[in-house]
Image (tube, rainbow, N blue to C red; front, top):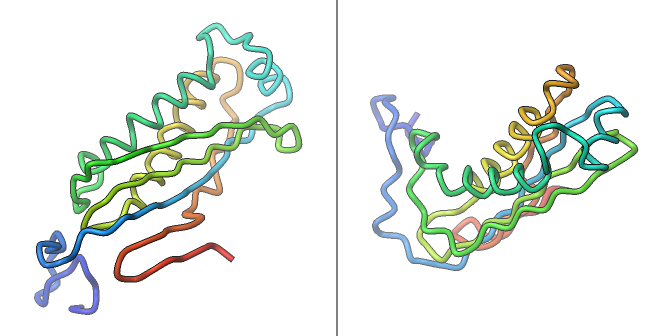
Length: 158
């Protein structure tokens, strides 16, 4: 079990000690989507939902979620984000909304979880804002798309 970074030799969960690591510039990008009925999609596109501007609220929620990652994921280090950028776009072919989050920092550990959390919270907020008209929406395809920096180097989803 000692090959796992978050498990000690006795098999107990632990936070990874990053005190000896060098600070480097790091970036991670994640994405995901929510699929809904065509009528729900049109309501969001036309800003006709009773709760207001769904896309703006979901963007702000994703930013807030990324900043709170270490409060929600037990073994994540608190990270001072240099930037968290969320993009949301409508995709009529789903029909639904795609969310992409890009997190950046200069530090001793990566920002993959912050990017994934930003996407996740944004998508859950989209669901919350539109559930009154469409309880059957499906959140999915949340994944890391790319990461830059750190000891393990760069990575891109193929």
